[in-house]
Amino acid sequence: MSKQLRVLMTGATGYVGGRLVPELLSRDIYVRCLVRTPAKISVAPWRDSVEVVAGDVGGPLEAALADIDVAVYLVHGIGDGPDWAAKETADAEHFRVACEAAGVGRIVYLGGMGDDSSNLSVHLRSRHAVGAVLAAGPIPVFELRAAVIIGSGSASFEMLRYLVEVLPVMVTPKWVRTKSQPIAISDVLHYMVQAITVKQAAAGIYEIGGPDVVSYAELMGLYAEEAGLNKRRLIPIPVLTPRLSSHWVGIVTPVPASLAQPLIESLANEVIVHDQKATDAFGPPQRTLREAIHLALGRSQSDNVPTRFSDADLQVFRAYVTDPRWAGGTELTDRRERDSTASPQRVYEVISGIGGAKGWYSGGWLWQLRGAIDRVWGGPGLRRGRRDPAVLHVGDFVDFWRVTEAEPAKKVVLHAEMRLPGDAWLEWEIAPTSSGSHVIQRARYKPRGLFGRIYWYGVLPFHLFIFPGMLKGIVSDAERTQNHP
Image (cartoon, rainbow, N blue to C red; front, side):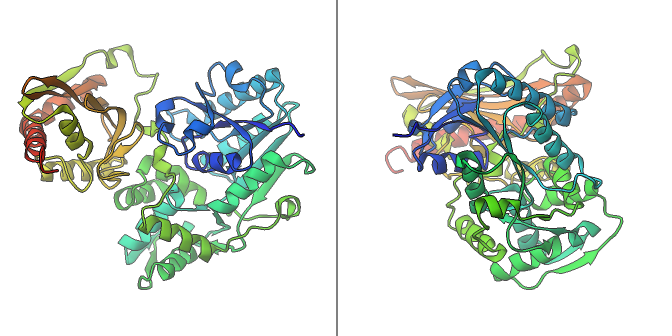
């Protein structure tokens, strides 16, 4: 009887990792997940079938790597601070050294395609650097390099989907003519599984792509056809820079400008497969580009999307460790309290449905204005909506917030991912009373620097209008639906 393969999965809360885990489990592979916030995978259908270790690739790894045969590296630091590319390589080196000490037999890494001799974008250059660092030691490394991944919920697909569906006429930069070789997420998973389990293939770099080579303009045209849309008109503007393009993408799509910019810069590089190494070792891709778009569209329209790019932490909005000491420390708070005849569970259910199509109970046009401003600044805005209209789980997004705590009938905490000169939370605490419940609502804000304080006091008049109405609306809705949900 053969020994069961033991795999460490990093990035299990991300887009690819969240789909790769069940693929491995279906092949009777033992999976251990290294995650920073274990609660984020508590609702995954495969949660009870994996071992979970809390931690980070940059921290202690002895427990995570103990008795592991294959380590899968799916960590991406894009936008994680001003020196995110340097941090990526440092984390990769730390991970490789830890794997060597633990006796790991193989590392599998998903990177980005691109010719090393060309003028690569910072994003692709960093992807290649991570692969080189992982391969610098004695452990065999299988580095799979992919271009645009086509699948429901991927950043590339969501950017494509919204651009084509929202804009019948588009002003486009010259990068829309650059050739690429998109690949279906199902084929990416196939190649990843093969790289993890194959016994005969040699370690090295494998370029993976679908059977079709297209420009981004052709990709948009193909999407329009599959979506049943009229032909889109593209007006090329040579002076449209990646920075300007990213703000345009940030306004129209759910992909924030700060994430869109490095992705767009990569579109200027031709990314096509140059050899048949992957096909010879693992077999040809199974899905054409048209089939991949068709499947992704079907999942998106039926809201059957297992993972999304936005599941990962949006570090681009976080305060950096390089901030001066005087930047934080102070916490400004708006606190409201209200009694309700509704039960704590009913109040919690109403709070769990806030945002998205339901809105925020008070100051609707102000929320819309703040969302529009956020998108112009490069944030996610309100376009993300919600994953589920009524249920909250830790890690879910709610417009430009992220759920960090969700304790039924007791507490909900949302952390702001909007562009802010500081850090903000919106939270509710619910306590039972003899007549129903007592609700405490807090808007907490830690300003960063002088502008952070100016921002808080500048929006304070709007808070005095929004927050009382929000709590009143929550309590009224809970009481109204107490016996008639």
